[in-house]
Amino acid sequence: MTIAAPRRKTTRRHTTRHLHPANRRRHDNRTVGERIADRVTAIFGSWSFIVAQSVVVTCWIALNAAGFLWHWDPYPFILLNLLFSTQAAYAAPLILLSQNRQADTDRIKAEHDYRVNMLALEYLVALHRSSHGPDCRCVPDGLRNAEGLLRDIAAELPER
Ligand SMILES: [Zn+2]
Image (cartoon, rainbow, N blue to C red; front, side, top):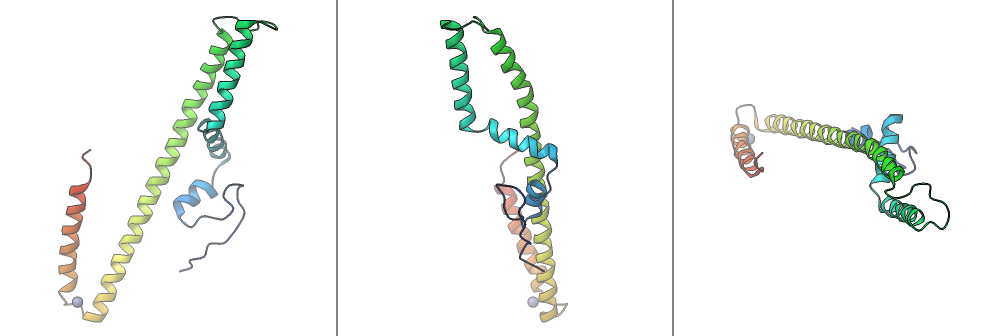
């Protein structure tokens, strides 16, 4: 098994290839659409965006209410409302897309962790049997203990 991943520049933010398959799927093997959705969602979810938007809205309303220049969108600022509706109409599906991708990543991570755990368990059982012999009681006893632990962990999980 090789531990070191090949290093390759992929994106500006992630300069090395990821080790975990879920992160590889999420960051290294993105489609163009996913890249755009990630970028846009990152912009929407930033303080810079909130501040910039607040500045633009304040200026828009101030200019149209005070009227030093010309009134391109007088009170009650219908054009501004239209722009906000359009923005919201695109923001919602983009955020959903991003959430779906996060859910996919979590699912792949959980699946991968489960497989690695099962592999480690099989390896341990095989290793143990090769040294203690196939009739040793350690494995069945150990499995009973493991089942008890699993029950304890399951009892600690939050109610759904
Ligand atoms: Zn044993």
